Length: 176
Image (cartoon, rainbow, N blue to C red; front, top):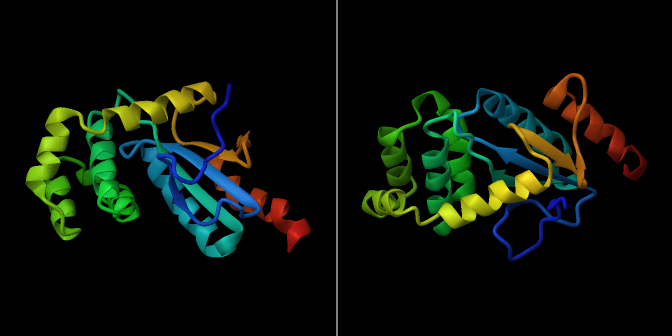
């Protein structure tokens, strides 16, 4: 059964108001090159549509990407300190440099402890959260990244995520 309805108080990372006319859910992998391209598209959507779009991010690290799991841990570690979106953005913006040196630099720039991050990476402290995101994705039919859902419906077009702004514009037309 699909698990696409974010709710306040659960473990979702939410930008915007869940009561917005458009709720966009992404299952992403920080090392996926297509996710990095989709990141730029989502940023344009957020700038263009503002409060009309609520964006929800869920982790879906793919095993073929050796840094994806650790990058997800870094993002969740930052989230524990109220800095998820800063880490999320930095990970995508520095995708070519994913690895321990970037993670240390990132958490230091956020004013967080590298020793605490190292402990989180070694103990799998965030594994239950990341696994829950993956299981949610699998129940929702995710098999690769990025995977988008708009208002609970899988987003698929011939041009993929590049069509996202036009589709959202069309969906919002009656409310604008």
